[in-house]
Length: 92
Image 1 (cartoon, rainbow, N blue to C red):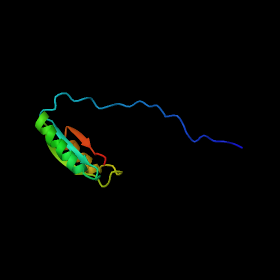
Image 2: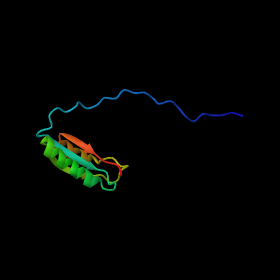
Image 3: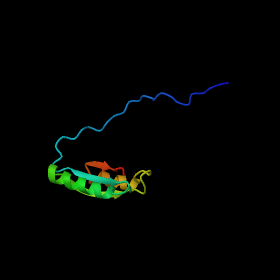
Image 4: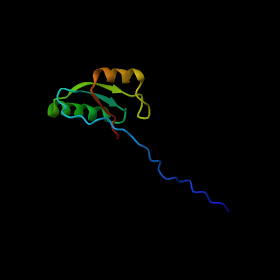
């Protein structure tokens, strides 16, 4: 009898993170809502809190087609033009 182990060790790979933002005051945040239950409400409240506590300007919210779909190229272009940073999705 041959026994196969279907598990494999994780593949290590280098990733590069975006540079950490310093002061958020005056920066524009774009919000990407992933269609999960209450994600729009949570992101709206997060935007309000960022504005109140850190002087951030909410540039808008984009709604994805579904949680498993990527943001469309048009939406990504709009985010690039109107946002300095983006907060994307929330789970349920």
